[in-house]
Amino acid sequence: MGDIARATGLSPMTVSRVLSNNGAVSESKRERVLAAAKRLDYHVDIIARQLRAQHTFQLGVVAPFQGLVGTFYFGRILQGIQQVLTGTDYHIALFDSLSEDFDDVGKCVSLCHERRVGGLIVVAPELSARFPRTFASLKMPLIVVGSSPSQKAISYVDVDNYGGACAMTQHLIQLGHTKIGFIGGRSDLQDASQRESGFRETMGQHQLPVVDEWVVQGEYEARKAFQLAMSLLAKNRRPTAIFAANDQMAYGVIDAARILGLKVPEDLSVGGFDDLEGSAEFLPALTTVAQPMPDLGRVAARYLLDVLNLAEPPGILRKRLPARLVSRSSTAPPNREHLSLVADSKQLKISRSN
Image 1 (cartoon, one colour):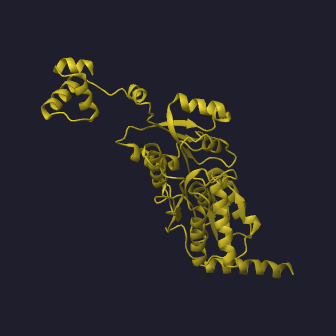
Image 2: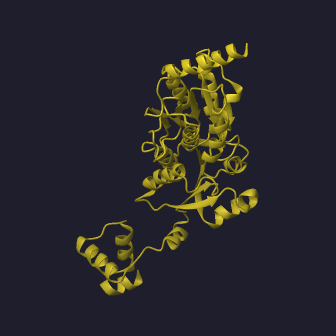
Image 3: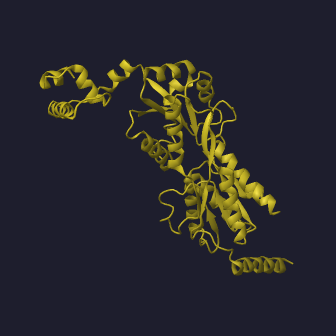
């Protein structure tokens, strides 16, 4: 800024007003300063600016690098956060919640202070995670995304996983399915239990039995779901529809059905949850429940900016965004002709054995 002042013959105060866009300056002086700044390749020193203002411009995004960072889900949430931060002074600092620093509360707090983080967005923490509660008690601005902590002092924005699972189960029942299996997610994630609850309660509302051997845990992994589906679908007694608690597992179920000679949806309807980027192009196109992933990031980022910048910051935010059923070609009414053939075949075996 001193170089620009000398080059233009103006005072450092005038240069500062132009570059910070704060204060009255004549248009001719403004043009002289901006021209000199461009010629001298001037850039704002963000760190120096933070130190002078005694204010931080970093938002920490905390997530497990293994298993979440790099996924379509996390990428879309991050996209929503970045959309809100674009045009502001704020930037993202990524933290691995599975790292050594996050195993120790003191180290975790020190790390955030060293990185000059003003607030935290915690994405999909495990049920056993301690650090969200710790930060809430330390009064650090924080919001959890993709989970609904029971502690009233912690803000969160989540998806209505329960309602979305109810919608998918209801869809399969309305198609005429009464024999429905369920492949659940990881037991350490809250959304998995919410989706299974939605499935079980909707089945109960229609007085349909939940067959224990048709409810299995797939860990949100396609390979695991494939293995489970191979075992489940090879049995004589099998469901006519399977609701997988995420799209990756639904892909695994469909692959298993193909290997076993079952057609989807003629012999087996399959539904998922998430609406991943490739689900519409999958063969067959996957019926699923769409999550508003970018909206999760946008809501979280706007909330933190309001907490950090408003004279009267908002209180605790506890919000669930609706999920939306997307009906495609992987689900259809059960094949009554196929079911009757199976029943006739079993009856014939019984007669021969007698």
